[in-house]
Image (tube, rainbow, N blue to C red; front, side, top):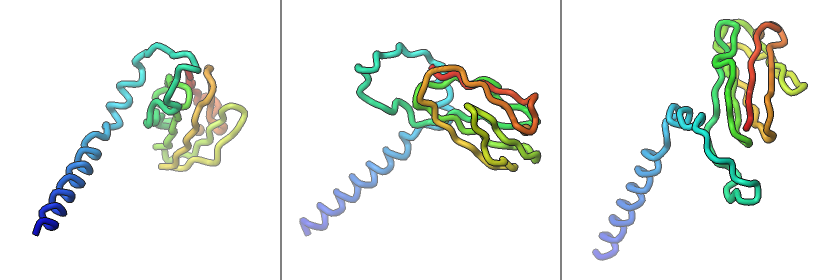
Length: 134
Ligand SMILES: [Cu+2]
């Protein structure tokens, strides 16, 4: 009898923990709105957590353009490009070229060094974008 009550209590606490975990996951939009906020850059030795964020900055390829054209991310953040066009695109960035990106295809790249990275589409040289890593 006592065991049963204990078991129920454990289950209740497990479920409430799970519930908490799920409700605490921020919406992608919340992550996006937090990104432009300039936080003071700590010195490299004073950074206890190597991964400050778990979100991706998304760039959509729409109407033969990168939307948004310029994104600003922090070091160790990743950018995800998704092709929404029916046209095939191919991203040329940092001296490399992605595979063909058909409609719905994505490409993710993490940035480990500060800098301004300009990129374009190999098939449509007028399509240009910039990733600023700070
Ligand atoms: Cu293209």
